[in-house]
Amino acid sequence: MRTRLLSYSTAVMMAIASLVSPAHAEEVIGYGGLYTSTSSSTPLFDRNRATLTAKIRHILEQSSSEGKLPFKILFETDTEEVKRLIPDDTYSLAVLITRDDVITEGLNSEKAQVKIDKSYVNVGMVVMLYQTDSNAKRNSIVYSFPLVGYAMHVSGNQPLSTEKLDQLFVNVATETFAKELVNRLQDISLGKITGAVKGISGNSFAIAKGGVDGLTEGQKVTIRGSSGNQTLTGRIETLSPREATVIVKAIDPRLSGKLSFEAVNIKSLSDETYQVTAFDVSSKKCQQLLDVPRISAQASQWFSDFLSSRGGRVVLPTSVGANWVESANEQSYAVFLKDGQEHTFEMPKPKYEVKLNLSGFSSMKIKEASSDINENWLYKIWLDVEIPEKKFTQKFELVDTKSLITGGQTFDVSNQIFEMLHQLTAKAAREIE
Image (cartoon, rainbow, N blue to C red; front, side):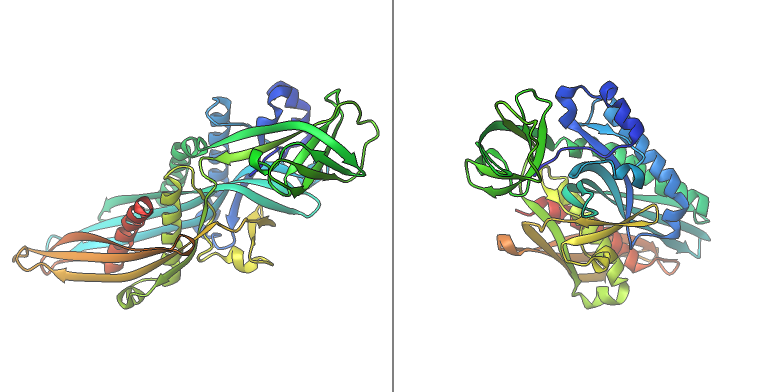
């Protein structure tokens, strides 16, 4: 995978020299902003959009200024007027919000006249490094990883107010982002590939490095003259193991002397890419107890996050339960929203598709452990994981127990499945081969 830079405003263009030395210019990535999938525009997010946007930007600014990231981030206004001044093939980092769920469970005890409320907050995010093609008006994701903020809040006698829920949602999202961002980005590096130009024919340049050096077909390449300031940009048209052909739009007659080339790649610890493309619920009991489309999307995001945390795995945004897939013109495209405007993103097809299935759930009262005071229940769920390209299929299971006051304490079994499934996706993602 590859990267060169930049997405910036006129003001920032004037300030580049003070921010980045020429020797490190290729290590700068522009900030593209906060996007949402078309399925995640809810009152919860809408109420907190401005606050969350500001906090995420602050975290990025602080992490970049403290040198904790493998590159510098250049912040910009991203206006349409400025975009027309930006050359093709610019690169940015952005955050995509895919889920914003709040589920409240009431645990009631009539005898003790006590009510306990549990609020589960689930925030799905995807951090994207993407390339902007201003001519085609689309972006291409070159690296991504999911982040999930998941927390439980327990309160007595009364549920959380709207204000408290909003605060909990923002805190979960920003604390997760701040905690995980730096660690996940340490899995990548920016590497420069340089070499000699072997020959010129029309607007075609033959260069002396190829696929074994990390170059990819269609990658952007900069051709430089001997003075270093004379440059042309083009794309790799044909690629062999040890050389490539770069096509430019037009030859600049000022380009002279001994010619060289350079390209910049984004590299992770692994070239393997994964994407959760299906989540089925074949368990009849779960079909009756759960909102199947909702839990499918939530669990797919959880699994993606836990799989990404194994280090070096590029995990694309899950397509399960995503309206942005339905809004796209082609299967490989997604439509995300920013500031009310739709933006098209091209996603590479994953090397490995992951298919999940919530295949079973059972519960039983444990007679020997129960008494006149307490009822003790045993719960078990099963999750099937299939990765067809690896010919991998495995069933994972999880067991949990719950104790209730006999005849006086009740709760929603669907919330038990919700909490157990979150734990089971973590177990499965960390144990698959």
